[in-house]
Image 1 (cartoon, helix red, strand yellow):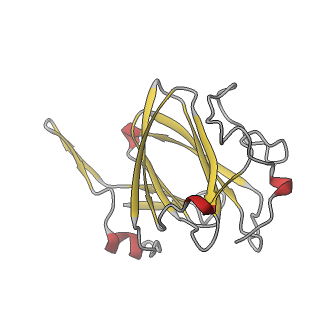
Image 2 (cartoon, helix red, strand yellow):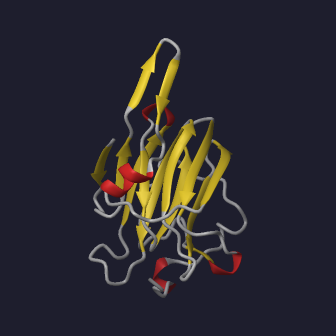
Image 3 (cartoon, helix red, strand yellow):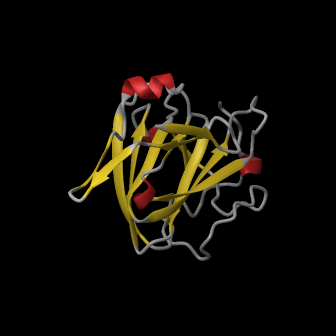
Length: 180
């Protein structure tokens, strides 16, 4: 397994070892010991799996403390443009974002620690997105940021995304009061 920091160094790109032959492939998508050796020591307590069609944008979501969630995300079918926004007030990268294309055929994953807003846009006809979370989902702690906030200036690859009603009304980062 190879672990590389992205432009925001706490967001990690993880490339697992993949063993393939004429029968198919095998990989460990999570191994607690190996992840701990790489510095990812949180305990994952919930797994989620979503399917979306091209153009769907989910996010930018976060859970407020004490229900904040770190995430280990990957795409098992298709391709997405994955984004993390640093919400940690004392961080040198506060208010900055980092993005990475997650493509099923590469098997790569991102680790996004708690204190980040997270979202993705589907680039393929369909995509299945899986993520492990370090905290349980708590509806009363749900939060989000406006996906197209001009101050964040996220460079989403597709225009006119399909949004949920909830995702279409989040406020801009300028109105966010850091809880992290």
